[in-house]
Image (tube, rainbow over all chains, first blue to last red):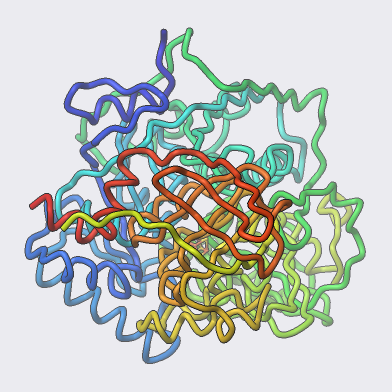
Length: 422
Length: 167
Ligand code: SF4
């Protein structure tokens, strides 16, 4: 029987060089990403375990991104603990509060390449599947075990294959596609499974668009969201990790999938999708929610705070004013994204339109700072989760959408179809 | 020391499907470093009375996909801290499932449990057998047997003591 992407990548990281769905394997991890969870939770576990030495100081990235810069003295202390850890163990890769969101900066720093096995102390670590790497999120104790040993046990997941063909229509983004997929699958439709995304649509996507899809795979419960390599990924890795050797991994033709889903965008022309409270899998065509009154519009996060997201928002907002009934907050995903947007004039466009542009941080996405919602407030957001209380008060409401839909809605003060404001 | 997996007897707290980690503990409490402090906010959104009314060995019963969303280990940690004896659900989100055993909080998958059990019922859970008994009616529900890896972790008392044993 042939092997899936998950089986191949996990298998190549085991002693026996092989893995089959359902089996529990001990795998050697290529890279570990940790953020504030290091300071708050992992270090105490390491202390309890009696771990003095990290397995490989060159294979860990530490990021201070969730409350960057510190929103209060507690987060300041967590950041301090991370800095001390980095210094004490000579950790090679460190992004302090001026850097950006973990899932954006790790690929920017060239720390992921095709075929890798990457773990992050964060559920959206599925993002690196866009680079043909098996990557998944684990929590503090597992991260501590990896820091100690470089190893981790995995149950090799069954795989679900989604083949996508056709072009995304104008003003419809990869966010709309993944919101549709997560809605079709349901919040646990891919639980314990790996999703493989294939087909011409995925092959022709930018790295940014692919990352959005891989990132939100976890909203259907998936362990990973994997793709094969395309030209955009080749160029990215060649530029970001020059001279580093890697080999593309492709699934076998006779690999076994628990399910195969075909999506033809030419036949199923997808509209912009909005996920209504309180689940990312509550997607509806924008026409069904148009006119919902808003207090806040947010563009940012590891899902949609990248350059192409800011570009489409700038295109929509250029020369216009946001509606006075709401505030708009824009948080570029990384310092690099911020600088590029600045040079291209997008930041100026945003500020002129009446938006607030913040430094790169998780910020509003996790209800941390820089845009926390009050009771009864309604927000349209380019982020990935709209669970009750996610962005602030338990009585606030979050609608998830693409950056294009968020920008169009900011102009109107109500949820709006981005095709209506051109 | 090998810990035996004893029967867990307690009262049921019943939840529906898709109880995500923000319902268990909201993101805004994650900077609290003391789990006992954080545990005061357990289930604050869906069951604000939970933290003050929960008793030792109480059993969380839930529908499908318990613990979805964030990878935060604080979610199972604080449940363990409040004294919860185990969580029995129709299915668990992947990361929560792993985290539960890592922190020594027993989890068991039992089909249709949320429609059979109601709030406050007295239950007996036997992890070694993989069964849940409703004490009032005597009805016994059969759950999934735990993989060996999970039994090892629970017997050790979680991943930290397990790791120390391996060293
Ligand atoms: S931007 Fe939001 S989803 Fe992404 S890592 Fe930060 S908090 Fe998590």
